[in-house]
Length: 433
Image (cartoon, rainbow, N blue to C red; front, side, top):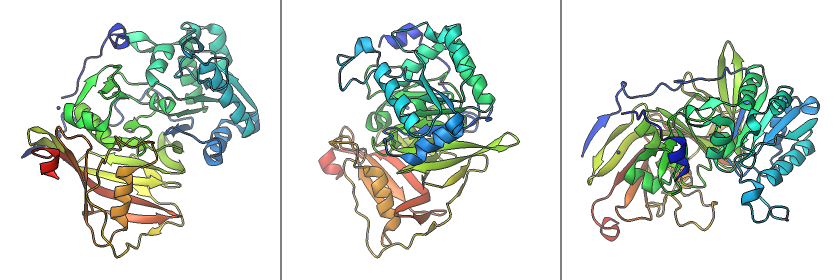
């Protein structure tokens, strides 16, 4: 059942074999709380946007007006200088230093004017400043940097009431009038509607379920029921998706909160919301890796080995140039994409540490790599992955079933309709494996 409570601001800062289909009564409509019209362009980046990603940076600048652009940079998701021990030195990564970085790089990619908007935790009242809001009213684009999306909640919205500050109301109005809104990592996550994720890791999410609020323990799957800014209304959003092995947490949060769709954004990759007229829009993938679309319309939640389980999730992985129609739940591959000719080999199975818990960096892409391996393997229809944790071991089963298709897109692979099942294995890790 959908949770209807939200922790107070003070509480937040101090700190769920027989299967049954997810019922229509508890399934949340994808566009449950559209708070902004799709008149402007929305660009959501999965994080780790490289300086050399001209495709995404140039699109941000172009959508803001190019040489005539007036872009406002908001880095309130970063720690303020008062909390950065390197403030004022090389290597500083606070709101001011990060603001300077975005100003410089957007100008380098051709933006006519770029200004840092001085809002952060060191200036708690700045977002309600009439002067700041007046300057934002003349801007043609807004870029939100990364960090922690909850800092954006506390600086740009009014506490538990979740109402707009003057600055946020201005940004919302400018977006409705055609301005760009873009964000990377936390700056993309904050564009979510209800049930914005605020933390969590896949294994703990599958084992323990989700909780409403914000917690200092990053392993706890948590969400804000009131959501973020509400510019993106087609489903849940998750970022750093393949790099951090977040499929488990995304599916669990969607199932717990009644959402039927999740968009998982990979690093250095963007999802652009493109208005199509008449109030409609499509979603286009830009960048280096891919965007995962998780379809839970046919998902079945149950219990195995005394733990939560789910099956019937459909996973599509869309790469550069692919277009997704959220109203029809359909994909159009880019020109040049060709059906994948699978090779005469078997996919590697089982895949250990499938959520990349023990990976030394975020470059392994273990679960997405296993899915691509399966797509390319003519001798395999199933791949199994195991969690690194063993109390219990969680299994992830990927299966090529009806409706599955894969494509070669440049040097990469995209696929649609891969079936996902996740459940706990009985017994110890050694016995289960």
